[in-house]
Image 1 (cartoon, each protein chain N blue to C red):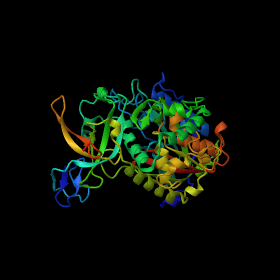
Image 2 (cartoon, rainbow over the protein chains, first blue to last red):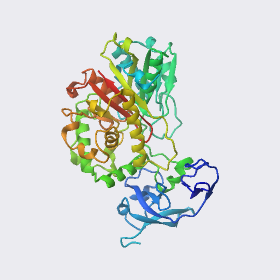
Image 3 (cartoon, rainbow over the protein chains, first blue to last red):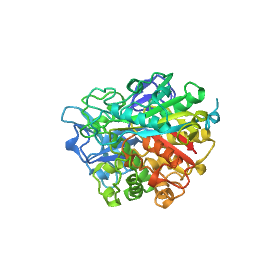
Image 4 (cartoon, rainbow over the protein chains, first blue to last red):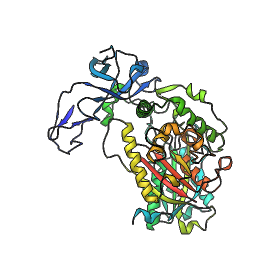
Length: 114
Length: 394
C-alpha cells in the first residue's frame, strides 16, 4: 500500500501527494492483509460485463487493520457470498486468475473458518 | 453579498414536463424543447424573454456510442439554438448536483442582476439495452482499484453504503417497503409519473429481482426518456406573472468532493449531507422545524433516510423507524415526495422534487395537494458531495 514517509499515513487509491499532509515523499510498503468488512454488496444479477458467470459474488470494502478508514476492494472467497457481513474479520489471499493476472481476494477469519 | 441577502429575492414562476416514457420515439433534444416550451407557457413568457440558461448536462449512465448533443444529452448550447434564444446574456453548465445545483447558480445570477429570466432543465435519455451494462476493456483512474473485482456498476456502488446503514442500525428491507409503497401510491395519483395509476404492495417490492443485495430492481429509479424544466426570475418581476411565485428562501450546493475515494461510504455521504444542510439552513435562516413538506432525492431508495437525518428531522440511524408512521404521508406533518419521487416518476434527476414542491406551493398538485404547502425543503443529487438543496416558500 502507498504510504507517506513524512506523516506515515497510508494512501489508497494511490495519489501523487499524501492525502493527509500533502507531502510528495511517498513509498509503497507491505501491510498485514488483515481487516474487517466495512461495506459489501452481493451481486446477484449479471450487470457487469465479464462477470456474468460469477454471480452471485460478494464485493467488499475491507478496512485494513493498519489505519482507520483505509479501505481496499476485493471479493470474498472460500465462503458463500452472504457470509460477507459487516464487521467480520478477513485476511488477504492471492489468486491467479485465468488470464494470468494475480489478484488479492479475502477469506473470512475466525468463527471457525480462520 | 451574504447568504441572507439572497432570501426571497428570486422565485420559480413556471414549470413543465415533456412526455416521460421508458423509451420515446423522439430524441431527448426534442423532449427538452417540449419541457422548456411548456415551462415558458406556464409562466406566460416566451423565448425572447429568456436571457439566462443553467443546466446539468452530464449523462446519467455510460453509453455504448459517442455522446451526441441532443441525442444522449441536452446542454445549454443545444437549447439556446433549438429554442432560438436570441437574447442570452448568461449561461451556466454545472458539474454535479442535478437540477437544484443548476437552480442555485441561476439564483445567484438573477440576484446579481446578470440576467432577468432563466430557464433551467434536466434532460434524461435511456438507451436501449440493460442500463449501465457497458463493456469496459480498460479501466483507468480510480476505477482500476475496484473494477477488477466486478464492482463496475452504479447499483453495486450504492448498495455498499446501504449495507452499512442496515448493519449499524438494524434497518431491513421490510422497513424500506413502507417508504417504497407510499412513494408509489403518490405516483399513482400523479398524471406526469411514469408509474401513474400503478401502485404496488409491499410483497411486490420484497420479491423484486435482486441486482446487488441489498438493492433490488425496485430500489432503483427507472431510466426514462424525458425532461423537466423550470423558469426563474426576480421577486419583483415574479409578482406580475401568470402563476403564484414559489420564492427561493434559501439555496445551497456543495460543488465537488474534497478527496478522491475508492467508492462511496456511508460516512462520506453523511459528512457531505450535514455540510449541505448547514449551508442551506444558514442561507434560509430557518431550520427543519419550519419545513411543512419535503422532496428528497430518491434515485436509490434509501437516500431519503440519510437526508432526513442530515437535515435534522431524525437522529442519525433513526429515519428508517420514523418513516414507519404517518408523519411523512400526505396527511402527516411532513409530507414526503408527494409526486412519487424519482422511484415513482422515473429517473429525471431532480424534477420530481423541484417541480412538485412548486406545484404544492401554488396549490396545483391535484389529488396530491397537501393542506400546508407554505415551506418546502427540496434536495437533489448525491449524497457524497454532488448535491444541492433549496427552501421554497409561498
